[in-house]
Length: 415
Image 1 (cartoon, rainbow, N blue to C red):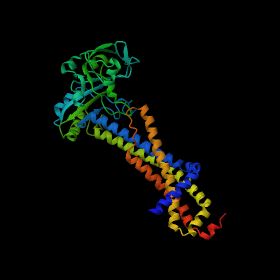
Image 2: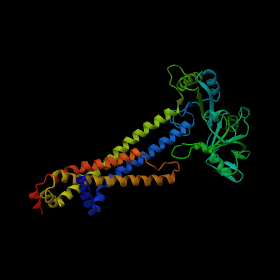
Image 3: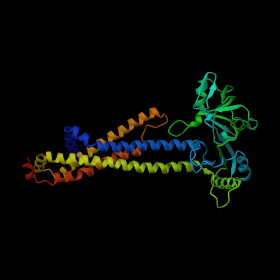
Image 4: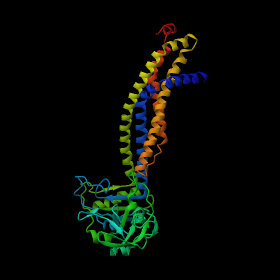
């Protein structure tokens, strides 16, 4: 232990005497560690938020939509002409499936009407970030949405197309401030609605707040009366306890029957579950992670070359010192340990600086995206530090061996 402590003391003294050279040598290490830790933080946070988002929509639910991907995104060229699902499909699935308890309906309403964006107004206050949707009376129960006040729609209100609304937490605060939204009125696309329910804050999201917090939900009847035949209908099939896999198969078969698909025709709709969507994100995240590792590897290689150069210069400059230590009885293993410790400390400092820099960048990102977690995962911090020290030891091995193999007499004659 005394020899190890001495090796680190000598190494630290050498690095302290050449701070600028040492800092330049570890720059590549710092960049590599920042890349690994920051990307790991972003991917881990995004994965957790997306997992929370879809689990809030129901882990026992099967989602059906006529396109693939995010329902709010523009369709691909291959799927642009697909027919939307029909609202009445919900009743048919409930009637024909033995593994489905109930089916909720969500209508995604257009964000603009006649070229003008939808704006929700209450008195002199308006919100242009409103997300207007149609919802069946059972939709909120199917997705497990909680109410802080009021209630969901009734079946009668849904069938009659009553002018009532349920608002998300962010929309309620934007329109009514700290006052209660229940019983208040708002206008949307020229019609006035009475708020009968306010949703609790929904968690999760895509790099930001859950968009359901800005929702303005209308009964499906009201949505069809005001906006016409729906072009984007999402069905939420709630499975019997423990029967989600069977419900998935049955919903697929029923939708194929309802859409008159032949046995050899592919589905013209997409079914998914929370686990499947999270799994797809994990695959994408894994590919991004591999690309990040490759990019970080280049930076670490540059850092290793820098450390190796510094160690070669250090060995050359201290040849007489090395010779004197060997002549006075120092073992070659002690000299080897001294220079390996110097390289490890150099790279370790780069790793520490990289982790701190990644943390600061994460805090800065949190100011922009409130839901982002600025705390990097512990495994990424440990990996960054271990890899940086390992790179330092590998880079310093040959210079350290060269120092330990010197002939004391020749080293003492070095100018």
